[in-house]
Image 1 (tube, helix red, strand yellow):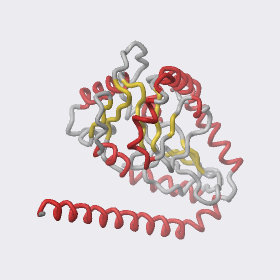
Image 2 (cartoon, helix red, strand yellow; image 1 turned 45 degrees about the vertical axis):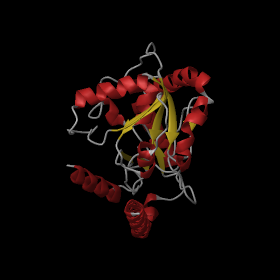
Image 3 (cartoon, one colour; image 1 turned 60 degrees about the vertical axis):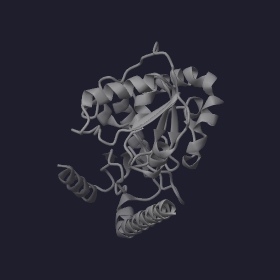
Image 4 (cartoon, one colour; image 1 turned 180 degrees about the vertical axis):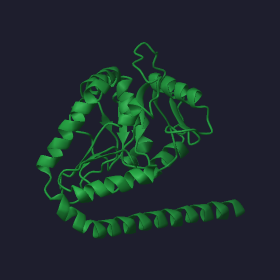
Length: 284
């Protein structure tokens, strides 16, 4: 089904390159078409203004967690929390690190599948996730397999202060993000207790502003019009005609594949070296 949708979209892009626009929630997609992407990355060198990030519309349909709602009266017993899949380096680091605090909860939920059946009971996992977020002064929103995460928008919807750990993620247009979102560099994950304790007195106000921003820009009644406005803005502002970009696409794809291969190879080498070091230490 997914492959058929991709092929159909590619045909439309080739047939109507200057008219067709894209909306995609695929984590690691390389943007052939101009449009909105759940995991749009920041421009690395020159911003062609072809893509923007946007809310995950599936969170109102196929990927909806029905328990996600505003729970303002829940007592705050956790400084911060995170439950999610171990599917990238920053998440693995969060899960492996011992924060040595009773008011911090970081759990591996790899067996839970938000978009389909998983090995964990779906309803129980969703309930526990919502209860944990509601009890938290701050909810961590690290990047996932892609730059973005549906979690950012769920946390905003719940009125909890979000903390972003996603260096390459381009925040969606619209909200005054700096008024409620705390951004922590991925490499400084171990400093989260220190950083967030310094902002503890602001957590409820940041949560309130996060909910207000969600209602104004991303709530179901606002999302469709916002999507059309954003797509129109991209068509007006993009700096390269789609026809020209598609001619350059094979080179762009080859470069991206080479970077991905190099990154995965380096990670495997590092993992092997760590295992070898542990084995050597155990032997001595």
